[in-house]
Length: 600
Image 1 (tube, one colour):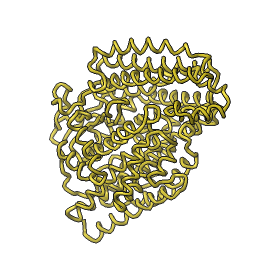
Image 2 (tube, rainbow, N blue to C red):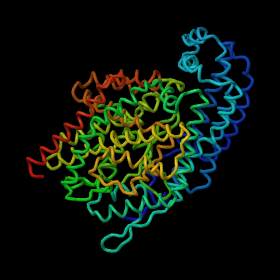
Image 3 (tube, helix red, strand yellow):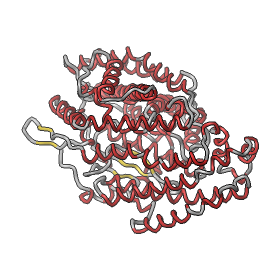
Image 4 (cartoon, rainbow, N blue to C red):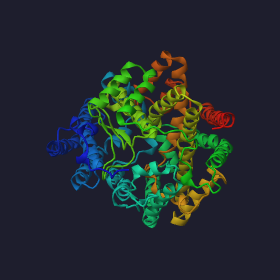
């Protein structure tokens, strides 16, 4: 591996062009001042919202401010993500986020004031053409009435927003910038730099010594800060409890599910479905242990492919070509948009020093979405590429079809479009695999998708449920207790096949999604839904594609569970989750059959 490059060393074609959002840093200060002056005008509508004409004017002004403020924040945050060490963009991002908090604060009077209006009146307004764009907002006022506070209390909660979101920022700075990892020593004595982007590469390396070093280096860096990380996470959980109680919810989980009108049975049903499939997971772990020939299977052995197929390297251009072939069933327009993303610099491709780790798709309404990658030329990176492209196309189609107020889809459906793409890529590779060994390798990849996206994310979800329940009961979330909870869940989900050591018990300390409470379960429900949708696309063809494109264009025009029904998935019933667990079981059986019959 070569040394991680600086941003200046990369060709511009591998960098996103954020000038599509705001044309250069010099225009940010001007936009900031414009937004700030317009926010000051919002107070003139206070006490007037029972007048439809005044309410319409408020909505128009808020729309204008929100669009500009979103662009400023997205631009500055993504500039910060290019290099988190750059104080200029750290400051700019903080300043832009402060504007969002100011906007929320200055409009804190809106919901309490509308709450005083009769439900029937609000619902009738929601049906009027002049309020068409804001109809969902007005209906949500009625649904949320019992959880809305007085104007003064709403203002206080809004003012606390910037402080409340600091936990995630602090974790990002600690994890992505300040934390240093012990270098990896290769068998020939050379030092290799360890980073978040390279960690996954080392864990997939055939050399067990390199896997062990990377694992221990990553976790030891977090253990060295474990008391700080425990305090940070515990404080974040307490923050979640505070807001849930302030909003008059019985629990954080209830409050988080309420926002999307998600039945709690969907969450508990996921846990039940995955628990029922744990014997299959134990069987898979035992097979992994056998095929690797390791008596003491460690967690750092769980990512290396257990079938030795020649792992191809995919240049970025080759990854794009493969992605386009796999996603062809979605139609010409979909593929042409992917071409646009490449040619118009929507994508930031490679890892550079200080760059935010992982991958995401994001953007501002009225501008195409962007994708952040840390591409390493492995097959997994092609999967990441199609995953983020799924998010971006979902955003693009929803933004194109709907007004700003209805375009933003909720997190619950966010992972569906991304995972449909992953499943289509896998199905394409399986169909076109030249031999049994390659097919076995790909089946192992699918098994790993289930393990990491369904089982592991559900384990995360159960950990979150337990930590929040303990905090709600007044229990302290100490390092010891967090390690106990996480260690017990590892033993439950992996059985006795994998050794639960002192390192893996601390894995909770390095999961960024835990600072967005009750987020991760949606990866598992999304994956289960995506498996069903991808199957329909490949077996039914155009009718299923048309329904899926309708879903992609539906944004936030209805509640997530209802939107998924457009694409043919009903998560209020256990069918999709049970079906997904059956796919996992069948994939394992097919994998075992190839291994046993073909001597691979």
